[in-house]
Image (cartoon, rainbow, N blue to C red; front, side):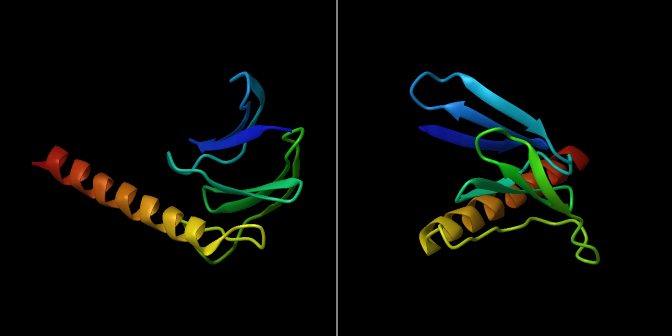
Length: 111
């Protein structure tokens, strides 16, 4: 299987890399425009709206959900055994950039 997975606005979408065709799309929980995810074996682990989800990588079916009670709503960095430390660092940098852009946009709009 030659797929790429996209997390955006509370959705996880699977795209066939060779055709660009959408294979499946699953709505999880919208929390912000950022939906973090990693592929871990046959699962996609995704975070959105303060909840962590496991989806079947082939079908998009939600296998489980964890509310992460007591942690609140914030950016989440997900790392798994199949992921390199470089990928984790890239995810952290992307989240910091998105946060900084959001602060600038909010400050500009308020003035």
